[in-house]
Every structure is written in C-alpha cells, then in structure tokens.
Length: 248
Image (tube, rainbow, N blue to C red; front, side, top):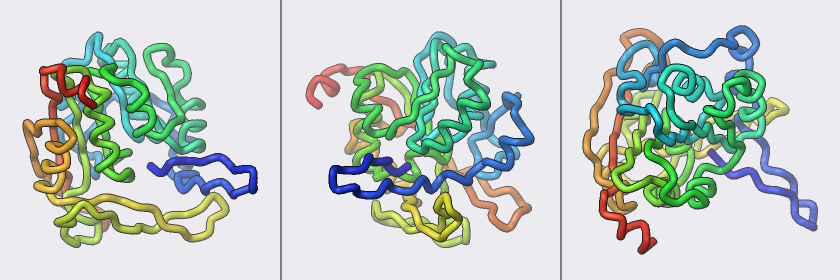
C-alpha cells in the first residue's frame, strides 16, 4: 500500500488515506476472529492457513494486513511466536486496533509502510505473506528485495494475488502498474496503483530479489459473482545460504 508521508515545513498536504472506507461497514457488524481464512480472491474456498506451513513458534508478518482479520485468525488458532500485522493505512490500523488489540502480545498491529518495516528487520521473519495485500499495491522491485532481506535463511514468502484483472483483462507482461479507482476519505474519486502481473513476471522478480519460487498455482474464480477473479498463489523461499543477507 502507498506510503503515508508527513507535511514538510512548506506545509505539503498529507497524502489521502485511500483505504479509509475499505471494510468499514463489515467492522461494525462483524467483530469476530475468523474460524478460517482462504487464500483466494472470493474468500469462499481454496487453501487456508495450511498453505503457510507450520506456524507454531514462528515469527510471521502479514504484509498489507488491512483490518487484520487474517492475522487475528493465525494468532488465535495457529500459535505463532508473534505475527506482525503491517499496514500503511492509518484508518485500517485504527480499525484493527478496535477489533483485535486484545490478541496482543501474540498479535502486534503495526502502522508502517511494508517495505520500510521489512528493511528495518533483517533476518527476523520465518514466514511472510501477502493476501491481496501490500505486494499488490507496492512496487515489487522494492518490496520483494526487502522481503528477502527480512526472511531468515530458508524462510517462506507466500503471495496470493490476481491472476488477471477483475474485469477479465489479462495480467501485464511487464512489471508495470495500473491505476485503479479508489475513494479519498471525503468520498471524492481517486486512483491507486495496483500490480497485476503474469506468473513469469512475478517469478522473475522473485528470483532477482534473491528468492526461489517453489510453487505457483492458479486457483479458479468462483462460478458466481460479477467481480470474481482467479487467484495466482506463489510460494518462494530464501536460500538457506546466509551469504545473501550479508551481501545486501
């Protein structure tokens, strides 16, 4: 998700929080910890937390956690040593605090840019994942190397992202973003960047970041729903050779 910046001495205005409205209606009616999560766009089925492997005693981070529902599930049901739910949006972070602050200290809610947070935690995490999160909305040429740096040797990165655009258009054959509709906090129209890339583009970017793609699967779209889309699910590992971390 986009980095939130502070005003300068010249009173540069704050970047609007384009995630201000996202999930707000649901948070008022559903405050529960989910019994299950799904690594698919429609959230109706498909792989669950098992796709992350064994989490007991592990250091985990959710990149672009939003209101932290998925992170809350993992904290409550899968016994990680700690899971950091990272999101750059002040509104999403505040929503997460209101919903799941009671799960601390196993769940830590972090209001930060994902790339900057990862760069500040080299060799810290066993598992990182992005469930239609920060990997979709951050330049992967910056985020993926930061993820590789933050993983311990042998650590795992799992990405669930769009296999194609929601309107059916094919994913990009180059690492370029699209501008997609969004709303500013005052309701006015805006756009945000989203990276919808072909499988070989993702695997190439992962390789250049120092990560080895160990699996890539296309999970079909649900048969109902006008905004249904297939999911590309990627697993990548950091080499067990620690020299890569020292060279970065």
